[in-house]
Image (cartoon, rainbow, N blue to C red; front, side):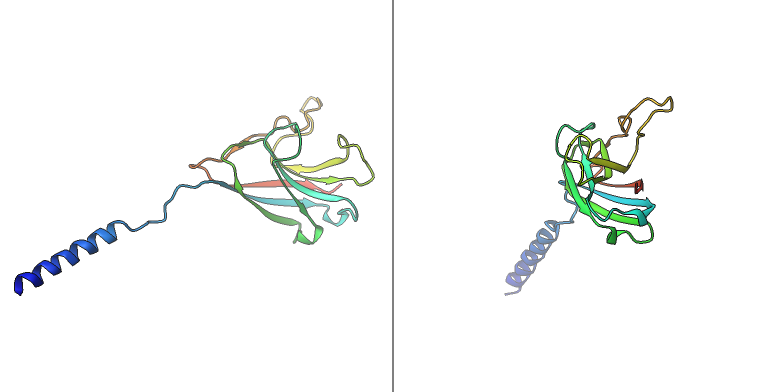
Length: 158
């Protein structure tokens, strides 16, 4: 009986070691990216009463179609001149531009009805005055090694 008890205890100890060694440590690799945006808005009191304000994420710039992701925002989301927003479940890929823009409801031309208030980087014009239209924006990339990023957009409501 003493040998049976010792064998049972040994088998239970081995089972416990096996079960503990199979424990999931929660370090599964990321499968998508998350972008945290902070938008600092100057002249927020001039927020238009009509039209739609978008925060968009484009993989190409200048755009060749609809943005990769876009969300409609309202003036009520601005607190103390700042708005925070998160895009999650983003493809592991490179992105060219994060921007905030207003669509003029009185302009039906899709080539002229979007008015950009701000972007994460880049300039509308070069230092020499050449029209760049944010063509110099710095791309950002999401991957398993870089799955979370925070950017700031300085925007002026006009």
